[in-house]
Image 1 (cartoon, chains in turn orange, green):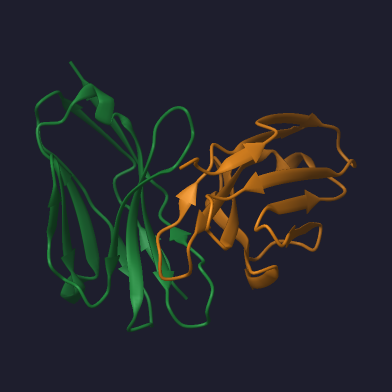
Image 2 (cartoon, one colour):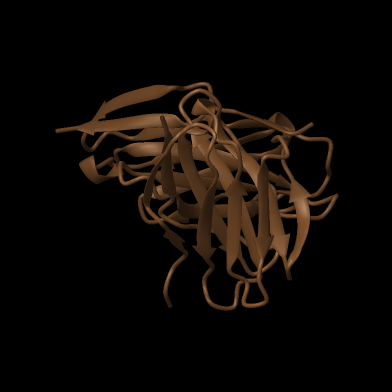
Length: 112
Length: 116
């Protein structure tokens, strides 16, 4: 069974631009969560989607948004990029909230 | 609010030594899950174990073992006879059951270096 895939793996953007990251969960997994990892703040929860509905949201500004499609694939969008948005963005999928999350390789975003 | 503390920022051991990574958590929930993940230099978080708050039984998987003690809110991870391939950052995480969702709260991680 294929694991969680994320595209692109690396991205360089300029301050003020917007970016869209994509995540394909493990087949059959309906829950997709997004996390941001930075050296200063560590791993922080962004949001979770289940059956196309946002079920939980972390403490991030409205510039961070996401969505989930009917095939469980998910995208997250960051608008008006700031230097502090440079991070590794990790996507995770699970069967449900009662199951463990499996993570993808991440998208490393650099904002210049 | 839930919180996970990993006191050890970095641990260095020589191969074949045993090493224990400590994890202490805080939660108001009576039902929750605890996890350990490994993050090698490649960056991908690798799932190691999940423990339900009602199951305090210790678990052993090969060279890995976990000690869950609800009385001290701890979920420690021991690697027996460590190997160089064990070098990675290890994260302890907590997920509360109430409120729905699948949010993981992570500790700050412990960098384990295993040297020859």
